[in-house]
Length: 148
Image (cartoon, rainbow, N blue to C red; front, side, top):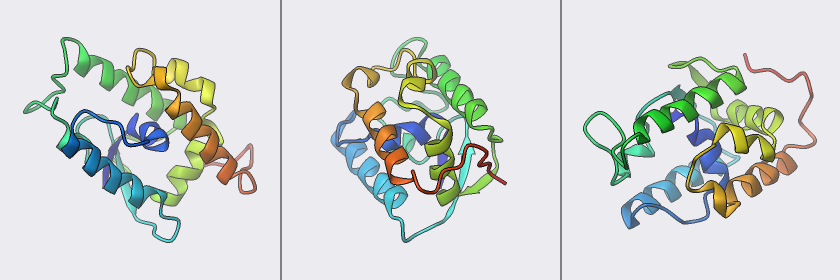
């Protein structure tokens, strides 16, 4: 699976809303895989099109075409999240470690900066999703936890 930086956060708050019916169905499948605690698989972190983008009606041939400036905006969110988490673009990480990393390093209020300008932020579901992820991993988290 390929997952862009900011989608590591989006998937936490997904509640069935989306850009189209096809997008929502694809997102449901991806989120289900990511939330399945019994399965672990490699995820390649990218700054660009990923598995989620493939069903987006705003995807152009090479860039996001939601509106003028959308490509620059989504790429800036990718880079901010990747930097915040200390990840390397193009590197594979175990899903389980990525979810724990997000839980340990992202606070709900961090989304105000990391996702600034995102139209979905106003609904509060992403912040709620981060809070739920942190709660789920509370016993496993260590302030010095790092990804290898």
